[in-house]
Image 1 (cartoon, rainbow, N blue to C red):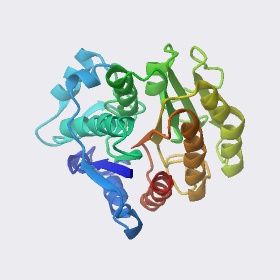
Image 2 (cartoon, one colour):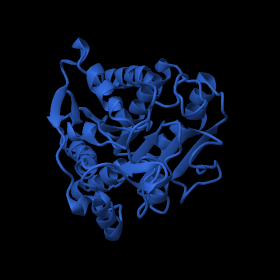
Image 3 (cartoon, one colour):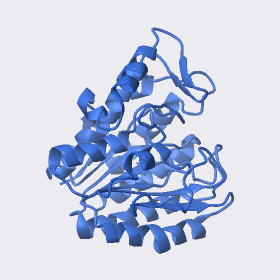
Length: 308
């Protein structure tokens, strides 16, 4: 088995407008990085469109209707001050969510060893009935619910190393003991959620990192808090919210991670997946706004997946 890569050209066409940080060039940089010779062995797949029923396991039907109704014929329409849609955004959002559900299918059935979804718009800020933080649909939450509804998994975990707390994912998971959410994130920072006192029903772990924190604090948070809790949960599938904006060069926050930290956290979580989940892992792109740092982070993350 090999690592599968899911992406789709429409995910590049999603255009929040000029000067927006979540620009199409982000995905172009990721796709270019994964064209390197070392990734020739990836099994490459076009992301399918998610089905409405898959999305509605996480999002309210009226909200789904509102997202598609807002998609303009040209230009941009803002769903909140940070989150805009263009003519391609509806299909891009379907392809992003569809990539994760297809990746779950491939990994859980044993067709793939693991999978990376190079998609946008990102998803972890999207609430059940609200777009925010550049996100329309919560791709990883949709994937987790798909794993349970279709494949009968009892325990699915999301590990979120994006610099921003995934409020939407936490709110989707926090009252369900069959789901686990752990996040390392800068605090204070957008969106202002993710306090270490937020535990859900014992299935949420938040590690707050102060502005300026670097590798030592990041790795300690995983070694002391997140990884032991993940191991105790014993997931049958691990899903990464793979954001690379905690890198020292990223312009939207002030953590100081190096590229090797993304390889380290990937391998550390995969070690847990090897024990309880037969190594089953799916990753979906979230943030990362310095194009070179983003490409470097994706490179080491996917390398770690592929070397398993």
